[in-house]
Image 1 (cartoon, rainbow, N blue to C red):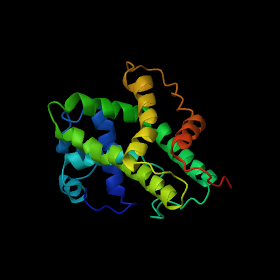
Image 2: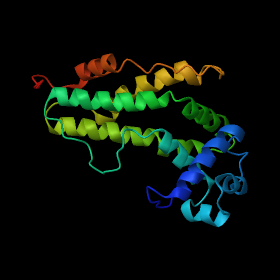
Image 3: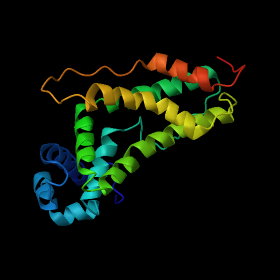
Image 4: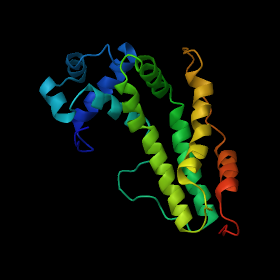
Length: 211
């Protein structure tokens, strides 16, 4: 995606319009002309913010799954105790677990899954915009824990999959594999405390400090 100022009003208009149109018509059913019209911008303005429609979809997916980003580029806080590490993983699990069960996000995932056999690049857009970022964020936290001597001698990619897998499975079983309905009742996120405690029991180094 082109470099966009965080407060760019036109970017926000395009993002909102894309969110609406993709959910209503699917990715392939939305032209850039229709997208520009819905956003109230010219096609020239659209292309000055995004190089193509693929980049717009990636932007929509990224902003539905924020992964707790604050925009201050502070990076991963360095944990010094197991309690710090537990709090950091609980925060990440709450952010991601809660956002994965957003109905709009799930509906966009349905669109990506349905259209990827015909438009294979959509799957790659999704992988770049959400899963890779989730793995990166989890891996950074694990690496910080290892550096502090809190995480044992574990393979970071394997441990990241162990952490993220149950969160994704929860969304899969409770929303993605359930027929869409008009019922707006929210789906409860995963039991974060239990998930994180079990995960840390598997990966923490022995004799680490709790406080």
